[in-house]
Length: 106
Image (cartoon, rainbow, N blue to C red):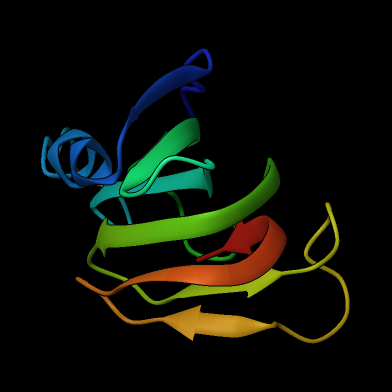
């Protein structure tokens, strides 16, 4: 897993970051998480996860924007350890904003 430093960017850049896929794994591809800013169409990227393994849990901080460009479904959790019930599931290729989450499991 690679965590990128916080950088303020446009929400569309999350899609660009996520479109750069790397080596094979269970959920080949990239997942991006971020936080909406006060400026329209802008977000701070707080985590990018490359090729997550099936069943792996990744804390992402306090996010409310996500894009799943992996081959697997991403379950978003309100806890930092993927415990409890997922608040939302993102299918491969899906994106969302507005739902708070702190970790993601593939």
